[in-house]
Amino acid sequence: MTFSRSLSSLRAAVPALCSPKFPTTALPRTGQWQSTTPRRIQCPAFSTSPVLQKRKKGEKKDMRITLIRYFLLHPKAPRVLRLSRLRSLRHWTIHRAWQLHKAKLRRQRELDLERQYNEMRRACEELRLIGSNGLPGGKDEGKLFRTAMMKRDVWQGVPIEYARIQTEWPSKDGWNHGWTRG
Image (cartoon, rainbow, N blue to C red; front, side):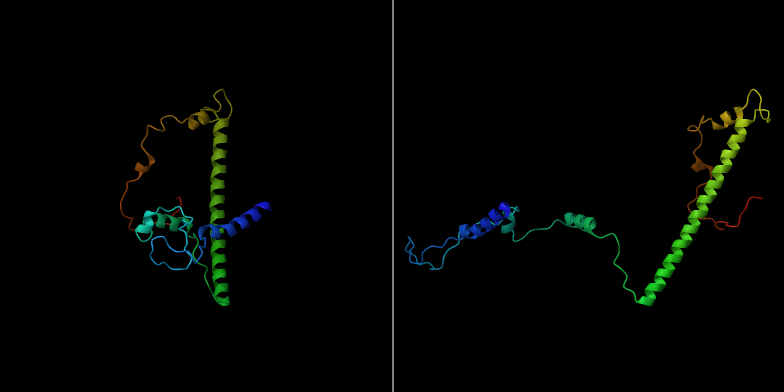
């Protein structure tokens, strides 16, 4: 409360400090005629910019800073579509159908990955329970599992990217979506 009072009294005092009024009857010492209007003492404006900018008639903006500010403060989302009620309903229906379709594909991929994971886990469990002769039990039970889980020479092999010949163009046939294992 006291801070706001002192701030308001300070604001009221600033114009009086920057523009004192001289009596209009005072004569100049040089003998030259001057205006009888009150003179203003030059008070610097509250600014952090250098005085040189005033001499150069304005501030020259750096385009790099302007571009950085534009891209930092520019909204990421495009402007909102302004549609009629019927067109908005159609847009919402198509958008919702597309979202449902993507959710269905995502769920199918998740189920497929879960099925693959469960099959791999089941195969590893069978390897853990059988011996090197292929029968369950025995003194070397789990040897096939341990051998399969070894990660020796992984980094000394040929990278997987070289397993297929790399080309700079797509195949003539495209992707065969109907292919199934024999």
